[in-house]
Length: 258
Image (spheres, one colour):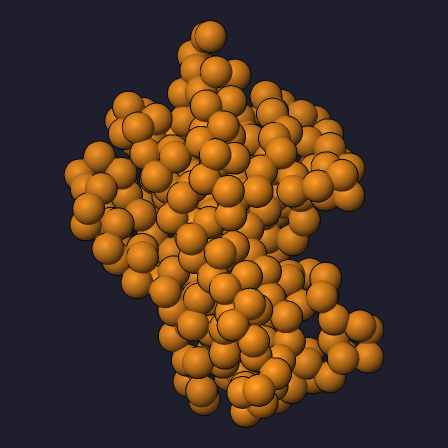
């Protein structure tokens, strides 16, 4: 094991969407990156992200990770430190949802609630716990969690999703206190992001309807881009040593009308 000459970041959910943008952004800024894939399909996408990161000069590692399994989280943290010799940051982008009307309580089963919480909340916690010792040893350890405006305004794809993201925000506050002063913990709460999770779970017609709705209900009639979220994640990780315990809304002003 050799210590990397560059800072090192592990990014969950980094085969697609915001996570992939984070991997590319950190690589562009001189970081080495761990890129996580859930299955064979996402592994192919992760390899494409890896190629981009290597082209930017980063050392990389593609890992298989299921954040709902604690042993998988621990294995990912161990693989990172074995490969790079250190771990300086963790960005938790792994997430899931299904679109279920909020008023249709009967359509939201206990199993769907549990599935959503297992990935979005418990997976986030398990990854932070698995990486805690390495982040502490770094001397600059930082965690960025992906929450959502859904969690602060009760909006979004389902009640389960909104509740899980609200819990991620609360988890961020709790762990920023519990892990201080060695590890900073912050969260980003985006609004609708073009190329984000909805684009991977909705059919084209439904996606167009959702996008039209957001354009009419935000102060700024535009879509957030995955690179914007990635840039904020990088800022919180690398350029904001005095910021911890913050949940930063990034939603084109959607919260102003929620």
